[in-house]
Amino acid sequence: MRAVLQVFESYQKARVNFVQTVAELATRPQNIEALQNAGVMQLLRPLLLDNVPSIQQSAALALGRLANYNDELAEAVVSNEILPQLVYSLAEQNRFYKKAAAFVLRAVAKHSPQLAQAVVDSGALDALVGCLEEFDPGVKEAAAWALGYIARHNGELAQTVVDAGAVPLLVLCVQEPELTLKRISASALSDISKHSPELAQAVVDAGAVAYLAPLIQSPDGKLK
Image 1 (tube, rainbow, N blue to C red):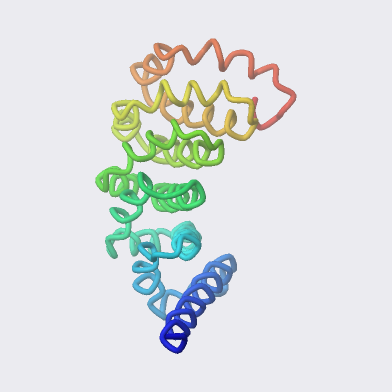
Image 2 (cartoon, rainbow, N blue to C red; image 1 turned 120 degrees about the vertical axis):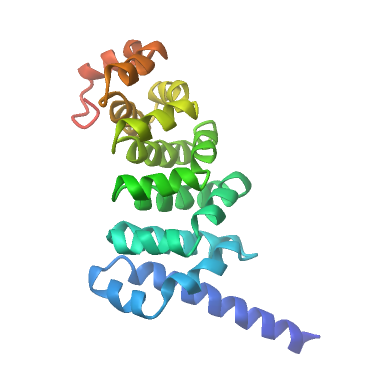
């Protein structure tokens, strides 16, 4: 019995070690090409569904760091069909995983309207809007950031974010005490409203101005 368990324990340790090391390697630009050539995407993908939560989180973090690096790697996240897995897990998993998954979605969406559209097509908007209602401010922040990155590309994408019901929840996030959450939510509202008078009106209609106007007096430079 012990011998059987040991096999599983050593396999789990190897997975933990692999995924944590890859996540660490992905922080340094000089490692990215080697990771890519080694087929890192295909190896990380099954680990997103691992039965050990810390392995899932590290896999998502590694994927986010890779996708953040350039559009080619972001494309690889899409072509390896990783987005639907992330979206599914956003509704199911704990707050640490949700933050990491939202980071991947943001890292993919930031590069181009086409990649942002791929994130939308994966069903991410409803999951991200759901995260804005979470208790944990870090989860809200990660979701607001991803929604802003989707909306900033063009009016059509911004409209999909509005249609998903993000604006009233972003207005609530602006009222939260955490400065970073206020800042990112205000920025997301700006990313939505900048494209057209109609989109700006959608933000105004949600009551945003009453909460955004006082922030101009904030001592925090970034928040202003």
